[in-house]
Length: 84
Image 1 (cartoon, helix red, strand yellow):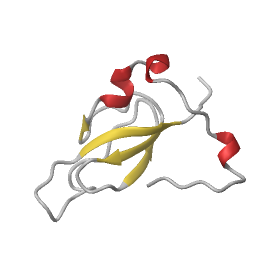
Image 2 (cartoon, one colour):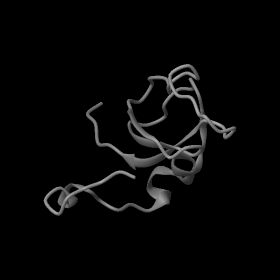
Image 3 (tube, rainbow, N blue to C red):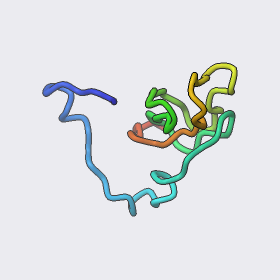
């Protein structure tokens, strides 16, 4: 789980799903697919988190593996603010 301190909490802003479109928050992204927005993503299969930049690729299977049989799928949990 992403963590913050009391001092860094002021830099987070809660948003409604509709501001970015629910597809950005609700879509599960497969391995090696294109990252839609920069941010922190959580693996639905194991709970690991990664930071990824827009237009990069999510880690390939050989870089993120599970010991269980769960699929590697990434969900956006924190969108980061970046300059275009």
